[in-house]
Structure formats: C-alpha cells, structure tokens
Figure 1: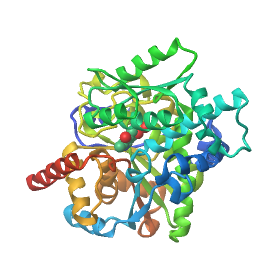
Figure 2: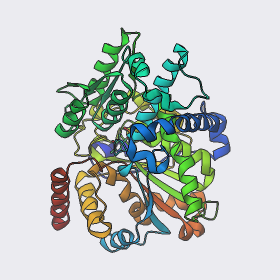
Figure 3: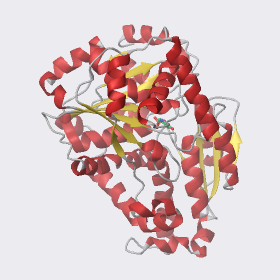
Length: 441
Ligand SMILES: *Cc1c(COP(=O)(O)O)cnc(C)c1O
C-alpha cells in the first residue's frame, strides 16, 4: 500500500492533508485523459438546447434564460474572521461559489443530476423521431412527450441530494422515477420527493448498498435508465460545465486567472462525481493556474484513501476500521468512484479531511459574518484556505509549484455545494450546533 503514513493518520481519524505526488503539468495530464474540452462543450450545448424548456418548466430559472447557474461571491468578512479565528493570513481574496443556491434542487447535484436526466430524455426523444436538435425544446411541455417518457423509468441510489435532483427533473418530464435512499438520508428530502410523485425506497444500510440495490433492480429492465453515481461519465460532464460558466463570471467580475494570479479551488467530495467533474472542467479551462483540492469528513475520506493508496474503488474506509458516519449529507460515502479517482489523479493537487465539529463551527461563522446559510457538508471546502495558510504540507506544495510569489494575487474559491433547500427549523439546528462547537473551542 502506498503512503502508509497517510493511511495511519486517516485510521486515527486525524485531520489530514494529502498532497498528490502523481499530479502532472496540465499538458501531460491531458494527454492521457479519455475526456476532453470537446466533451464539456457538448454538454454545455445540450444544456443550452434545453434552456428554453427549463425556463418554462421551472419559472425560477426564467431570469437566467433557463440556465441553471449559481452566484459567485466575495466573502471578505468571512476571510477576516478565519484569519482571526485560526491566527493565520489567508492569501489573496476569498470567494464562495454558491451551488447551495442553484435553482430547482439547491445543491451541486442540480448540475450533473439534472443534466443526466435531460440527456436521457433527449436520447429517447431523438430516437422516437419526435424531436430534432434544431427544434424549440419547449415542445417537451406537450402531453405527447409526457406520454412518451412515461413509458420509461429512471432510477438512482443516493444519500439525498442526487435523489432530489434526479427525482424532481424526471418527474417534471413525465418519467416514472425511483430513488433508492441510504439510511442517512433526511426525512424532509424523502417527503419532498414523495410529494412530487417519486417512488422512494429506503434502506437501513449506507450509500454503496443503496446504489448496488438500485443498479441490480434496474439491470433487468431495458426501459429503465439507472443513473450510476459511481461510474457515470454523463453526470461527470454535467458537473464540468460549471467551469465554462465560472470563467464568464470571473471575466464579468474582473478577476484575473493566469500564471501570476493562480486559483485554488476546494470542493467537498463524496463519491467524487460532483467535485471531480467541477475540477476536471476547471483544469481544462484554467490549466496550470488552477490548484484543486477535494475536501472530506475525517470519518468518510474515501477519495483521499483511494488516491493515497492507489487502490481507488478497491478500498473502502471501513476496510481500515472507519465507521463512515458523518453529519455531512452527501459526503457519507465509504468507497470512492474508481472512474473519478483514476481520471482525476494527474489533475488534482490533493485532498484533505476535517472533523464534523469543524464543519459546524464554520457553518455558524459563515452565518455570523456573511448571513449565508449552508448545509454542513458545504462547509468542508471552507477549511481549505486556512490549511493553505498554515499547514506544512500545503506550504511545501506551494514551494514545489514555485508559486509563492503569486500567492498574494490568488483567488481562494470555496465550492459551497448545498443548503438552500434545507427547511428553516433544520437550518436553525445546524446553526445552534455550530455555535456550540465554537464555544467548546
Ligand atoms: C453530493 C454532494 C457532494 C459531493 O458530490 P459527490 O459527487 O458525491 O462527490 C458534496 N456536497 C453536497 C451537499 C452534496 O450533496
């Protein structure tokens, strides 16, 4: 097993930084990669074809013309608070990408999940001869398309948020849809889905089992499309489109990104599809100027374990004695996606883990300083800039990359992956727990 000292730290549930020794310069990394910029553009074009439909089907997307996108915000009050709290100096400027506020399903899953449902619908509609690429996709609102899609079903295994995205979008188009939910999924998510006519199947076990059961049930049915969170390239590419949108937002807000203005991106990671797709897109768009990190809970840091050992999906956090229990929805994943781990190995700067307690403390801090309400998992990225400023392994990374001088011009981008759909009373409980954690420290 490679990197035994990292595995030891993970086993002891220590907060750990893993700098990826297999990262390559962008040009070399791209040479061995099965996916390209062209794939991202293809996904972007598909989402544009659907935009007129989405603007009508989900009026909350009308202001952006049916494009599902989230705000990019500078959070200087939070930056100052983190500097004070952790007695450090975060270099550059701190920004948050509010995927927590994506329309339709309020999490990063509104990118990949919705994209895969739309692509499935388009494939079926093309094959039926009822739709052509050049058509105005608002025709999909007509009953004949609902009738067409009702002959098919869509299934997915999920800890919650992916189920929300797939369920809401599939039900809107007219598909029959089943969501296989792991034991940690929140009651309110199940309720919301059932209210939209989604068939929710509950499991007493964790995410991997819910996915495996869903996959097995779907296998025998040629009219069922299974959204495979562990292996889907379609999901991955749906997420990657975020980078093209981000580039535009940087231009609009006059934020330079180049060799002397590097960008550091910190993305909460569960099975890996969401953060992997986002980081893949960012590396394609910004190349060597981008430095990407996956952020995971100490109890479920499956991607770090997979990458550090080189075993990817052949190792599970339970194999080394972890319980895979975390309050961070969407991150309670014990086995990473092998596809994502392998594709992303030459692109990633590293991974780190943090405790649930710290996520809650950061949650309360963000409310206090910026009045932004996120779910706990979405705060995993927020610890990255602090580590960059303080952690010895991070300092060594900066030195090795030769970017010390550019650090002051850097953009520190925290990817906030969910939270806007959380009911107010749940949100208040999260906040109170965060206040409590802050008091303890
Ligand atoms: C799903 C999810 C993630 C991680 O995405 P993966 O594709 O599972 O790695 C992060 N944060 C939230 C809120 C999520 O729902």
